[in-house]
Length: 336
Ligand code: NAD
Ligand code: UD1
Image 1 (tube, protein in one colour):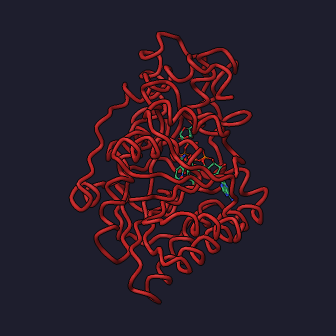
Image 2: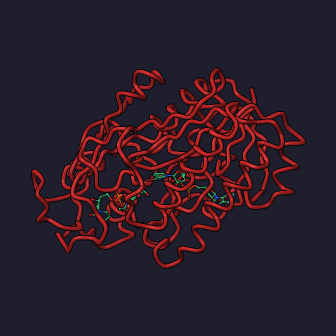
Image 3: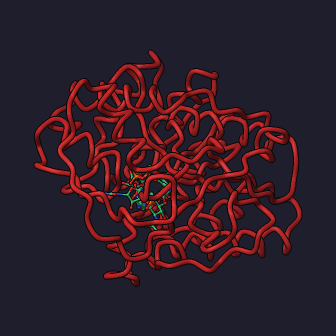
């Protein structure tokens, strides 16, 4: 079985390539390296002792995709390629709509053209917006606070219309909660350009001394310690969810959404404490103002993925912090 992984050199994509190769799949990666480097794929090969096929291809490049589908028999696609910085998306919405939505439409057209109608799509818990917690898949979605989030919602809707128009499609929408952690080899992990926006990469750069201080965004929320609650999920658990979803779509048709989270909420202060334990470092932080657009608390009801995909998260918050720190210390200057 051959899987095309768009965005396969990125954070979640690279961990998923490792799991696919370990499971015996043939892997073809299409990435334009906008937010990654080809060396990540060398490291995937090093971890697994297997090779993958790679194309420097932008998913908006129709001819590039045609070449991939003509040179390979693709059984299914896992679609990670996209831009993901929430703040940047409010400043540059058209860039996000063009890259994420136009790119996805070109990809879906070329899949249909090639007769490949099986796809796992990287969606996000952000599609739930302001719903009661825990979030469940049958809640109304779309009340999202950023252009980035809207691209995820729109692409889910587009795939819904694709399925309605052609019931041969098999589509899995994976709504990720907050992925953190790294492969335990320390060879691959999250390696954002510039100053990180997300909590975990920010914390690990403070711990290693590359940033002076973490600002906790808000200490006056109506939560157990006043800081926001999120559902953090180890990236390797998340990667494994893709294998479960691929196994499912290969044998069925239809469209289903699944929450991929631990089902547990941790506060920002919980994460700081766990990270201090894992790293043995005291973290320099202050409590600052709330960040616009942040919800006080959300976490998943992941029972649908547990029962229908037979997927279960294995790793706890301590392991997530240990693996992040291991990656950070082994790659103080990122992956070159
Ligand atoms: P990432 O930026 O590390 O990986 C995305 C990859 O896609 C990168 O390698 C990038 O170079 C590539 N890419 C971007 N635009 C492309 C294009 N037009 N053509 C080809 N390649 C392109 O991000 P990630 O954290 O691995 O996220 C993967 C997917 O999961 C994204 O779609 C993201 O929106 C989604 N997601 C991520 C999170 C998260 O917290 N990391 C949460 C929910 C959903
Ligand atoms: C954000 C996005 C979500 C996206 C996810 C991963 C919003 C509303 N949601 O989730 O769509 O899928 O990133 O890219 O933007 N925090 C601090 N200090 C920091 C950074 C973060 O206190 O320097 C806090 C935040 O307030 C939040 C928690 O840490 O409570 C997690 O933040 P982050 O990692 O950015 O993820 P989300 O905001 O949950």
